[in-house]
Amino acid sequence: MATDVILPALGMAQDTGKIVEWLKAEGEAVTAGEPLVVIETDKAAVDLEAPATGILSRVAAQAGDEVPVAQVIAVILSPEEAALSPSPGLRPAAAPLAPARFSPSARASAPHEGGEPEAEAEAEPEPEPETSAVASGHSVTERANGRRQASPKARRIAAERGVDLVAMRGSGPGGVVLAADVLAAESAALPAVSVPVAADEQSMSTVWRLMAERTTQSWTTTPHFFLVRELDATAFKQWFARAETRATEKLTYTDLLVKVVATALRLHPRLNASWQHGAIVAHDAVNIALAVATADGLVAPVIPHADDLSLSGIARHRAEVVARAQAGKTRPDDLRDGTFTISNLGMYGVDAFTAIINSPQAAILAVGALVDRVIPVDGQPAVRPTIALSLSCDHRVVDGARGAQFLATIAELMADPSGL
Image (cartoon, rainbow, N blue to C red; front, top):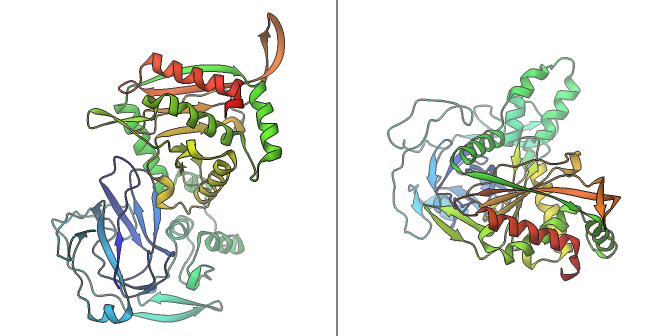
């Protein structure tokens, strides 16, 4: 039975997605769960996994094409179905097969590089013949034009550093070349392969470009204002020490902050809303996004329904999505429907900072380091652990009083977490 490959929505305000690269060619066998196509949204570039096992067929969008959310971009068929099926165009997920026209963006040999725009969709090219080749003892699938199958990150690194993929040993499924393979090959070839540091530092990944575009748009279109509070974190540290001994997962201070913020958002739902199409849109679910630094740029994977999770549940989910983000394996669901973001730079020794709102969310909480300071306690100076919290708010959704009340609730919960 045919299974549709549908372009997913990763954000509340997302209408389209861009095809960056197909990792499988039409007519190739695919396995459920393996990376199939790289898609780019306003949040990040992620690998879309194959929803079923079979033969990739009816590919209706090529690299560079901008496709509406919920459109079918390909179909996975059984070998028997693939032999009999034509190749229709784009169609909605719930609609019968029918050709559709759309305006693709510029196409080029590498993702995101310029090219001449085309007026309308081109006819689908015939699939290239494939031959079975053996490289360094690994059986791999190689297209007749000599282009080795490799992950998008591996191709980018290879292009930046002048590494030849064709003769490379791949450690991925079916011999696919991974980023680690490229880096290992480069290290083995030194000093024969050498790239100046400045060139590597100046290269821009898709994730970094998207981050730059999103933060620029948020900063220039969202009326930010900022509220800052420095809190006595004595009770917060004691809570962490107690919870750490009982938790079934490895805890971090971020996990406790997620629990506190999720509870506070339930009490202050305006901070869990968004400005969309000229109106305030409330969200029932409390989905906390975490700003995570990766080698390619900043992403914000989401812990869904954080207010319903235990500390161990939060820690487990946080560990999973952060690990995938840092490994460059973020899934579409990891970025979906965040309603509030926490950015914690305390582990880097940053005392305090302000953050740019992750639009269309209404606010973001910036968290500094736990630092011992001299503060007044019962009228006397005392050394206590303190933490600085900075709340950035969208003034179209949140006013100063609401933001201050939200911060006050966070302060109360951190000072007396017994209710959590």
